[in-house]
Image (cartoon, rainbow, N blue to C red; front, side, top):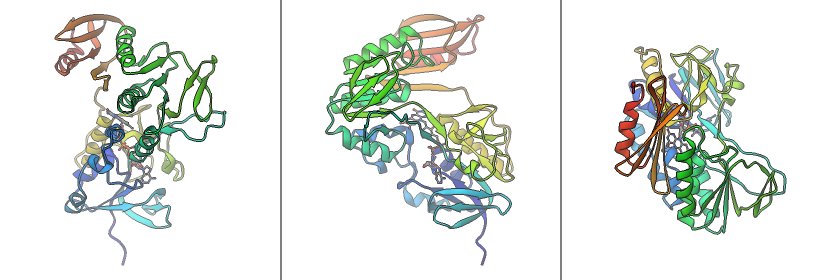
Length: 368
Ligand SMILES: Cc1cc2nc3c(=O)[nH]c(=O)nc-3n(C[C@H](O)[C@H](O)[C@H](O)COP(=O)(O)OP(=O)(O)OC[C@H]3O[C@@H](n4cnc5c(N)ncnc54)[C@H](O)[C@@H]3O)c2cc1C
């Protein structure tokens, strides 16, 4: 007897689970290739502190059965859109009436000469568990990439494992896309109090098992080496199935790919030349695709990006466009920089104080 075709979702990340949770009126299969139940990826840093992956689960196992969501363990390798089938690595095939690709993204690495045997990325719960084990015997760590995730990891590693951590950043100050130079300097001082040294205008040249050498000859201790240099949208399924992709899988505002009845959402998708890398957009697209499949969709408009991180105990928030004239004020222990162009607040950076961050965010778009 032929299996009933319903909605099939490839990828049990935030986008895929959000879509599945709203589609429980239909039969749903969620194909997942990680050894855990879907978890909050942005919280994997907590695993470095000794928590176990099941503490990050989005839902407990019985929730999926209650919602009518079948969990399928496996790695999808291609889609036959004319037959409405997904093929898995183990040779099995799953029929679908609608397919959602929510394969996320994978962390980039550099391949460095010098004979180093081990290096890490921090993208999955498994990555975090392996990294934690190695950090427990390490005397130093180096992180390549001074972006949000690299700095958050540096701060966590220095405080949890009490080892010196170097962060190599290619720009002339940290977080150039999120912070102005003065806010970056303040943050750098807080990090240095924790044992994190920032190496700006640095580029990795080679690595052996205990050190990292930069192109300008500087040498950094690196018992553990972590790459935090961004992600690549996971487009392999599209590439093997004739579905149009660029950096991400190309979608229109109804989340539709070039193949009929196939949608893409989350980090894997590309809309109007932009790819995404934030949980908020993954969740929004999960909601939007569910509405589309249920017949009450509307054009998806991504909400304004916001970045928030905790470094050396301080909340750092950045909203909107960080360029133009900066007006800085200190209020209730928080340092607030508003970025103004054409008399309108276009962006804001706040160090310390969640309520100050909320009011700075509310200023964006206002005339001043
Ligand atoms: C350490 C860390 C901290 C972060 N912090 C924040 C933050 O503070 N705020 C924020 O907004 N965002 C944050 N992010 C980014 C956020 O986690 C991602 O934007 C979000 O997880 C994207 O969701 P997704 O569902 O599109 O993809 P993912 O969460 O990547 O999930 C995709 C899933 O699909 C699986 N998969 C891939 N290919 C296949 C296949 N062929 N077959 C079966 N399964 C497959 C993958 O293994 C994965 O489980 C952080 C990310 C990391 C790593």
